[in-house]
Length: 198
Image 1: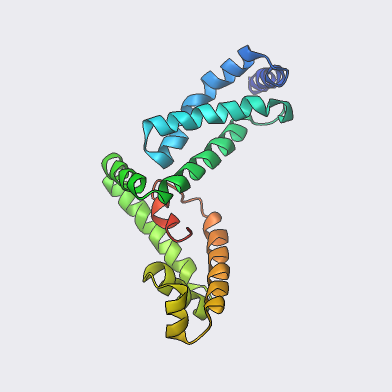
Image 2: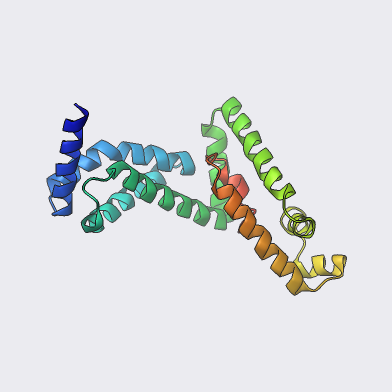
């Protein structure tokens, strides 16, 4: 039975690669709801999540000739949808008004106990990563991103040059992005931690 399913997938993807719109419709009908749920998990907004789904499948159609007919089509769709969702989340963060709306949507939509636990896990994980930075980087990071000091204010306080402060911040952020990137704890709470990186 598993082989038959693989055979169907293989032929459907082959048809998609060849530009068969009926094959595209089959794949859309099978995976669009999952793509929507993935986007909504990040954005908590119906319209934006629907836009992510549409853009995902547009990219699938436009890039169909590069598909591997023996590959996992859902994994391909998942990667596109997740990347688009995270990009949208970053854009939302850049707008104060949109960020406030997102926080409101998260507060209204999430399960209190589950999200509280997950939020605590994320916070502990992030603090753990920060605590493992070299002492000078850790201090400069906290002064900049937690206490809100400018590079010049930090330089004056630590009696070092603003350029040294900048270099430490670049290295600290590079380490944090790499370490947090390997965590699979990403959820809607990821917006809380994006403030560390932008």
